[in-house]
Length: 242
Image (cartoon, rainbow, N blue to C red; front, side, top):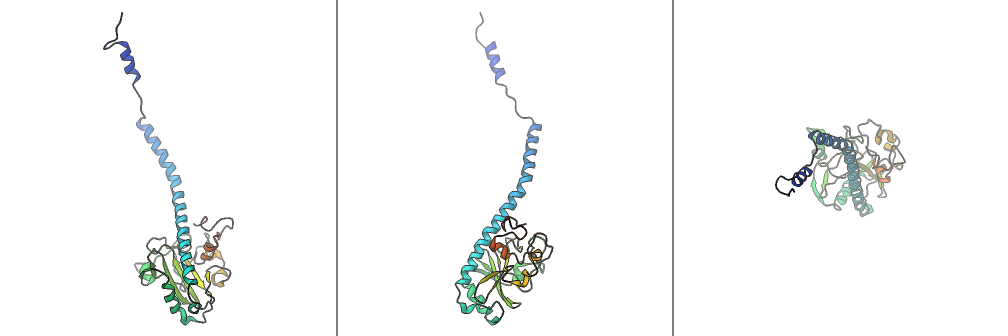
């Protein structure tokens, strides 16, 4: 008769059954490699979608604030769209700024220049140049956005940077948008059929993924406000943002 004791068969069998096998180093490295490849493939798309959503939210907020500010002004302060009352430009801008919470005021060169060169981008995020008529924002708001209003080239211009010069990308059609003002006090997004200066030249030059013009994006405000893609009418503006 055999008893159950130290070194007996039941205990030895139990010990053998508790032996477990783990992943080899090669298997772990292969798994990590696969995860890395998948992340590398999907991360750029995720980042781009977030950028587009951030730009859309910032534009909606900044444009809404602009509408509220302009439409709360007295009609007597409106500078003429045709340029007939250019002398009212300063009055208009001063009264407009009273509707905002201002953090800092300066020259747009000090906000957008680096090494004495203006650093802004086009709609396709290539190197761009500011429009001589419009300029760039020179007043920074407490929420980080920026604005400029100026009478030049026979019109009253308003340019907004929806998230300010520090955050970027400081690109036409992404966070920088141009508007003009009618003599009735209506905000006209540049690129609108109601405004012909850039529209007559077509969006293929001033708001298109196919344009190489250094001011490409300067007339994208119309498409952003109407939420239509300048290159594909079946898509929204932010959906097709480069």
